Image (tube, rainbow, N blue to C red):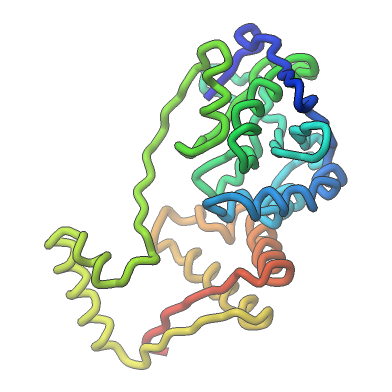
Length: 278
């Protein structure tokens, strides 16, 4: 999704009850200043996804961003507290046919989406108009604001109705299943062909020697299983040779840091591994 500088109207939000404004912080230090507010807002989200966690964004800034000092940390403030947070990074966008310098919402490329952190309805309506007006006043040589890939429930969709028509670039739809349902219910909803293939694979697995399942939660076990995962993923079984995480610049360090942060700071990371034949 692309919003042009010419299309963005000056939409600074005003209300009698609160003075809404965007406050900007820069770089890794700016991200740290917003950590407490980030965790408070994230905890109030109805659906908390890993790509919006503070740990994931911090690991991305530390290990993936070429220039962490150029990160723009924008907070929507109502005069009393932070109600929403958006991270913008400078990049070149080629969807117009030529490279164009833009500001884009921080996109962790291992995840399918990029979004703004915002939990309540009032802030959702106000965030994008205020953000667009702020970036318009301070574009720093980048005339386009690129949002997304956006989930269908993103707060940005609410704000788009208050702006000039954006340029939409639809890419993909995502299929998902509710893993909270019992296994029998999940299988019952699958096609007969899928269930048949699943049963065949189950029988083949049962025929192998030394089949065992490992769940790693402690730091030492997590480090070991993550290393094993990167080796298996690099064996080219699921993609062209040389495309695995292990061979991508900065990505092994990113995933190692993310695993450590999620476990050490939040205690919500674990690895499940299935072994067979030694």
